[in-house]
Image (tube, rainbow, N blue to C red; front, side, top):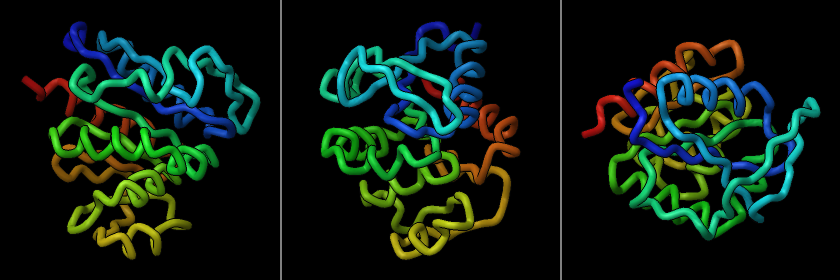
Length: 175
């Protein structure tokens, strides 16, 4: 297992897109990574758009960017909530500055927009937030997956296989 010494954080709040949370988490775990869910409150259960629950292993305040290898941000309606937490935005900024992989899919781009890390970056997302991404300074592409340095982005659930592979590949490339 190539990622056995790496910890990944997956951000969590209510109404995440179920597949966009679980699929990349399972792929990272299959590769040997420890994946923890971080939410506003440790131990709180959050329900996805289609009713699948996930429980926060840690709170946002407990996450230290120096101690994790990468970040997953699922889509759905959770990103609109996640981007309102200063600690989430700080974490995204710190991980980006450190060049650590940040995976985002669908509406998760909103978190990166609010963290103000998209200027001059190449990304994709659901077409519904294309304007938001471009207004944040990103160059948007209608492709299944776009990798720009440490940012790995995807459009929607049909893009999950190449997206999860690209995220795991990015983690494997870390020293």
